[in-house]
Image (cartoon, rainbow, N blue to C red; front, side):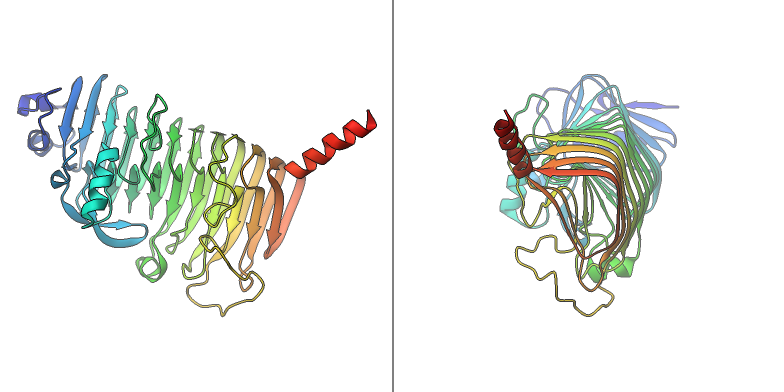
Length: 414
């Protein structure tokens, strides 16, 4: 297939010149099945629009760097945090029309959205919500592999209304760079899988400022009206190195089902699993599996708060500083249903928050939570409220108080 080197269209590496027009020309000229090639060097760009039946390939030593000027990122209509709203353009994105067969590949090349500078400028101007590094919308058959994506103004990789997505051997950095230097970006999710079907994320590393992977499907009435669920999501053999693990919600008003998280390690990550289904969202979260996962967290940056309840948590009052978990409200279209959470072969130790926190709604308890072969230790132990049919097999949960008491007892016996 034809290869379109962006330098042949006038893009100049390592010059500081903004090459948006030149790179976009290569994309526009790329024939069906062709490859747009980014060679070694740093190429600065604003928003670029990918199209169907093409590959964007980043060579070894190639860097696509976001411009530091917000004028290079036009305001566009996006769905962000479950609502259609104006957002600044992402570095790589698709326009709204349906697309198919888009690949981003490389030899370890880097997509760097320059978010440390852009996020501040976008928030200061405040004409829209912050952009993403990569936002692929309304696309069937997406492949992203063998690249590093980092420093997004907000969410790093946003998949919206996509199907048949394969993500493999990528690295994402939204909190720190590879050397541990902090970006200072907020709301920096790693990957957001938003109203998508048949998605796999494998053999990847995510070091996130917020949720490492968040699975969503719209918010409140707007999300229920669209009615596009996220389903058949598989996350396997991944390493997470900061942030909040694999989350479902809190925007889940189109429904989320059939999520499988397997064989993953969480290193100084605050949570393995979080289910956030609150009043007003409606729809459902069902058949969610976390299996063969380990977490060791030494960070006390976040403790037990309204945004974070523990290393494993399901929270019907997510985001509420004060709430009444005893008084039921009327069930309506905004009442969410959580049914079928499976936790198996998990070992975790954390100094932050609860080891396990499960709290459903009094009018709609979370149902059918199964835990097997769990060893969990936290600052606090396990808290359970409004759960119907909690089944445990070979589950051991301890708290820091338990450990202190054990140590005192051992000293007495000596």
